[in-house]
Image (cartoon, helix red, strand yellow):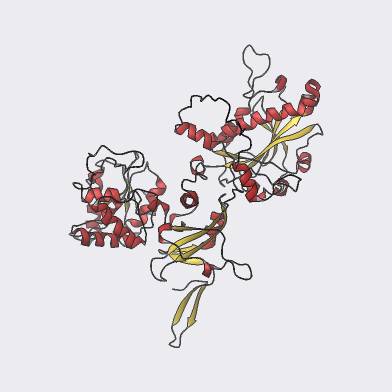
Length: 579
């Protein structure tokens, strides 16, 4: 069956020979994929400068998606949102700017001859690590609107309170002379904050309310090179200093004190925002005079600080720039990033890092000149791991490397994370049965998806390293051997795709082919707290007798469900419907 955009030619015999696609749409594992959609999503990541995605493999075989990435090695997209101008003494070359930043010139250097005193360090636990990572400039925002409650809680850090025994209102930030001359203004876009009309607002901190000044919007070009961030954002936030409110007390020092106060407010806002799933990006340059008119400001009011903000998921963004192993670690980061943005079947299995994309003489990307992807780049999840040590682990690893076309694979890598699907799953089972001379069910491969787990299931007596029992392990750079997983006591037709969690289990009946592999992605989407079991057709595993009637299948599946959950209510579906 041909689709619009397919290329072909007539042969002398009258048959049509398929030559590929006119556009960049490909078919991988039964899914039609528009490569351009993946490329656009990749380019939105702050670490990516250029990206090209293609499909490699036999025309009618098991194709794989490969992403060729040119990264921002100079870190220009991870810097403060600021567009440097042609000013004397300003470093403009991106590499030179990065080198200057890495020197950390803000630290005093020549102090080696002075005596020093090491202070007591706080325990760097997960809470402290999270605090460091959350306080960052976010340049990627979700299109989902911010809830009214979250937005209200975010701004509440600026709320003033009249406390007992204090004549003046108290704030969570200091101000010279308790004058609080810094005002907060917001530009809110249409449909980006639930229950808030688009327009320009003044935030009134005494009563914690927004005062609508105008329903007029602004164009992104006022942000001087940061238009892309503005387009994604849900709102702009400006801190404006009212000189009339402080100059009579401090004269020429009034603006300096306003800047100090704005700095305290900015830190407070950036700490409060992630707690409400809101990200802020500090903006260093903008055309303020145009905004002055829109905000109906007087000449005595000056811009001190500005932000762009939007909806974020802190868990998804906190590890963008954790480069663990140099250049190659970026592919792990990009894969996790795409898993948050695209369906799993659209996430490339291989990331190849290039210094530059090959170009044709007329300046277009030369896809034919892209280097052949190295098998070991299939996924750093496969090699940034402990290598096989026991005999069973080595056998299983060898089979995985053969069917998945991997150069190396670690014992903790998940089979499905490495590109495993229903076709290669059967190949793995058949090869392991031939080599190990024992029966192996498809259920076992779902239940034990890592080399370590499967090896311990197949050979529990011989696969524990010498000198260790099932509850001991090594730490540091040595192998870590967790407590051994035991096989679930469920019927063969009940496949535990996700057995953890305290919610009511969800049972999904197989499609017409009889296998439950198509539900792997659905089980992952539902999360770790949702137990998910696939009802697989009997007869697929050796020794099983196929069922030939719907009533027999239904009875068998009901009996299987009751072995795991004796009492209702039950949650049952078929991938399209759930009851």
